[in-house]
Amino acid sequence: MLALIYFIILAVLAVGSALCVLLSRHPLYGALSLVLSMLSLAGIYGLLGSPFIGVVQVMVYAGAIMMLLTFVIMVLNGARDSKTPMFDGVSLFVIPGVIVLAALVGFVLVSAPIAFDETTLRGSVALTSRTLFDVAQTGPGYFILFEVLGLLLLSSMAAAVLLAKKRLGSVDSENTEDK
Amino acid sequence: MELQAVYVQVLALVLFAIGLVVALGRRNVFFVLMGVELALNAVNLSFVGFAKTLPADMSVAGQIVPLFSIAIAAAEACVGLAMVILIFRNRESVDADTYSNMKG
Image (cartoon, rainbow over all chains, first blue to last red; front, side, top):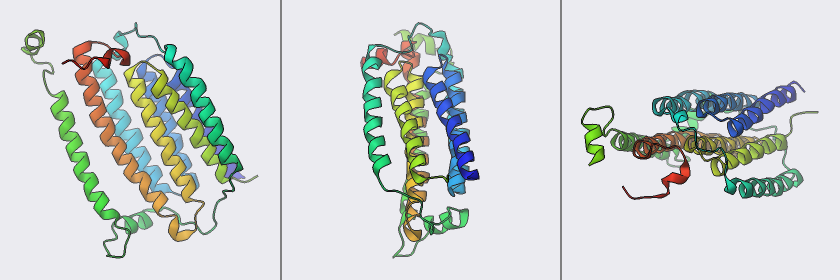
C-alpha cells in the first residue's frame, strides 16, 4: 500500500514535469523540468528494487547529461532566437498519431497478464557488479560490452571535441567564417 | 491495492508518448534532444519493470541493459550537442526546420 502511494506521487511528478517539457517555451525551463522527471524516475527505480540503476540515473542522467544540455543552452543563449514558434502544422498530425499508438500499446499492456515475481533479484551493487564483471567462459559476457562501451564513450568525446572546437571565441574566427 | 506491474508499464508508455510528441512536434532543436532523452528514460523504466516480472536468474539481464542504455544516451547527447553547437554557429537559429539544408 505504501509502495503504491510512493509510486503515485513519483509518477505524477514524472508525468507533470514531462508535460512541462512539452509546454515550456524557454529551453532552460524544459531542461530543469526534465531533471525533475529523471529524479522521480530514479526514485521509481529504487522503489522497484533496482537501487543501483537509480543511483546511476541520478549521477549520469540528471547529473552529467542534463548538466551538459543546460550548459550548451546557456552558452548558445538559445532564447535569443525567439521567433521560432513552439509547434507547427506537423504537430497537428504527430499528436493524434502518438495518441493512437499509445492507446493501442496501452490496450495490449492492460490486457496482458503480467505480474511481479516474488523471487526476483534485487539489483544491488553486489549483484550488478558480479554479473557485469563475470569473466567466466560460461558467464553472460557483459564485460566485453562494457569494454566496447568505454571505447564508444572515448570516441564520442573525441568526435564532439573535433566537431565543436573550431572557431570558438578566437578573433580570426569571425573572418574565416565570412570567407 | 498493491503496486501492480502494469502500472509501471503504463507510466513508461505515457512518458514515451510525451517524449515522442516533444521530439517530433516541437521545433526548437533543444526540445528535440530532450524528447529523445525522455523517450530513452521511458524505455529504461519499461526494462526494469519487466525485469521485475521474471523469476530470479532471468531478472538480472533487465537490470544490466539499462546501464548500457544510459551510457549510450550519454554518448548520444555528447555528439548531438556538439552538432547543435556547430550548426547553431552557422545558422544562428534553433529551429530544426532550418537545418534541412546540408550545404556547408
